[in-house]
Length: 421
Image (cartoon, rainbow, N blue to C red; front, side, top):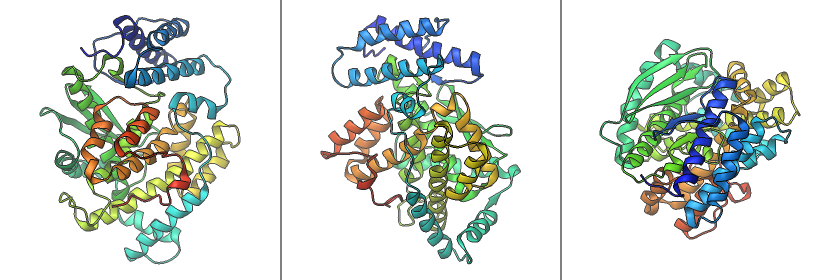
């Protein structure tokens, strides 16, 4: 077994993580640890015991050198902030997110949403739609609509194609990797869910209460499946089995500084596959499908700005329900059902501490991928898929890879919000 810290420190850290999960399950009925590759079990029965274990781990990693030390100090610091939040400490939302997620937490300029709306409007005009933007958008979504009873069928249609593109151009996977089932569900606030069941296998589940259209659904499918969450889960498990992944990172914990990578990578998977570039060498889909998927990705990015800002305003006490719903409809162009689901998501007591990682991770990873360029793509994927990272250590790794400054959160350095094919 690969260890980055001494045995006692590593054991205490992983015990604290798994015990946080048990606390959240007991209090909120949710899984905070969505995958765990070791045989370790939670033993800590209270938040005070968890806090003591975190402090012990903090002492154990204080002088650890190199990437392991930087990574583990980031994890421990975030765990301390998460534990305080679970204890009910009254800390402003933006400060809690920065402490837990290692990302910014501030309003996103609405001009960026307007830019994405303009790009999407151009695409819809090219597709032959006429009228104002809202009319064109509604007609496009309706024409490409996926009825609830066809969601699983459409997922299965593209699942093997996306896995083939992953193996050809992104990463390899264990031979026994696979999706055991694709399912529909109602009554949840999330859009899609990838559950890792072990032995390199997973299941995918999609929310049938959400209105779907194929160009919007396919980016969600690649996010949950290949080369998204399922690919990350099974590759990490395989590396752990081989002794190439450290015990101290042998789990995935929501509300931690690894979240921007774990969501940002899947949010960018359409781009990894080349399915957002009509000129790309991605034979699994047609040039017309690529144009449609690129527009769908743009619409999702537009929605994400409206949702992330609404989350900020609500959790900072600056908006209430009706205002937040209206804001998402106006700025993010969400339909009312989608806005209502998003509101439930970012007001959930656990998921509210997770929500911003989707937006910040999305642009951090895509900008890193484009900055690395084709010549360093294999090295980039090793950084993303094969090494435990926090937000900060990932940014440093990209700087080392490219030999240039990399600040993915300085919006003045990034003139466009559309993938560069």
